[in-house]
View 1 (cartoon, rainbow, N blue to C red):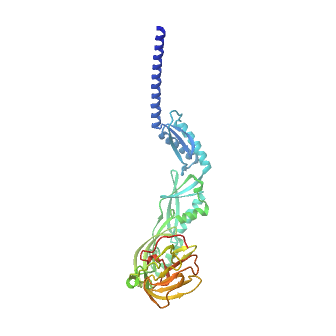
View 2 (view 1 turned 60 degrees about the vertical axis):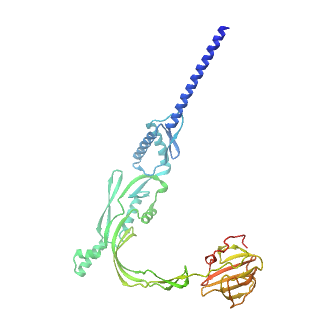
View 3 (view 1 turned 180 degrees about the horizontal axis):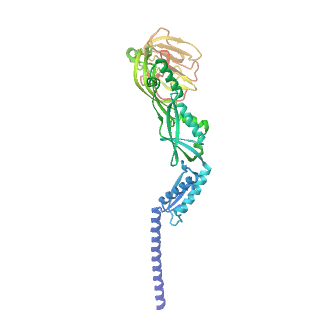
Length: 460
């Protein structure tokens, strides 16, 4: 019995020691894995979304990419101008097999070459400063440059001769400027006709004060996305339109032009505030201008005025601005709601406010005035009344069931002039209310006193 008890104690002690060792081992592994995951020592390297390999550091992945790209460029006798998308994604894994730089570079090279073969083509890049144009061949690049030469000198003063020099991996373009044959003939003709020296004739005939490229120009071969490459006439048209590459020429110019004097504004107490009326139309003057005009590829990009002489004075426009406070108008019914406002609907202008109400609801004058029209019709506005308030403004009240005024009657604000109905082009009982200024319907809310019931129910 004693032996059995000792044996039992020994087993218990073994279990305790084993459990302690297991806990210690698990704790060590947990801390190691956590530390590994936190430091993100495992990276997936992808080219255009395709897995190329694994690296244990971001720096080594970038080094492998550089080696792969250099190898690809050397094989293609060019540079890769537009990169495929390259990504390095950190992954949290306890155990992962990574590649060394040499193996990863080989893998990236194979993926990049496959991507380049599928999506890229060899092209020619013309770069000027921050601008570049990608064309399909050297022949197209030459056509672009020749087209730019021709547009740079519309007066045929010079001949621009392009020259090239190879610098490292690109060609640097330069130019030589000579007098054109046409200009030489013009100078000689002036010397003979007017008996002046060549310098005097040249100074009189030459207009150009500066000539050169837009910016330094270089040409190189590249691998690029085929969608970004222009061909033939399309490339020439784009270069001419963009002004990014080409000959910049600044020339003196002398010309006559029309010009206008600033308008003169006069306050007028007979015109409503916020309105203007032209009392005299402008007449342009004429002036002679000396200027330097800068053009790129025949397109003007700047103009510096050196001097100007007025040949004929302009006559300014005279505009009268209103200072007269407009009359105040009120909604012409009491028990109503706004069912439709001023504005376009269904492709046509709704030229007033519609106020829905009960049948035979009294309609009163929105502002003091004289009744100008009392119309009994079953079309259009139906039975309606027009009141003139002054020489500029009228109001109309349409779709009445009956009227309560007569032409020539002087009415005051809130005086009843009729009763609501649905005559004419109407789909329900309401009063269509218009404010007309100088024969043109305007939004009533610009004249109402603020109680225009600016809310809507269902349209009638």
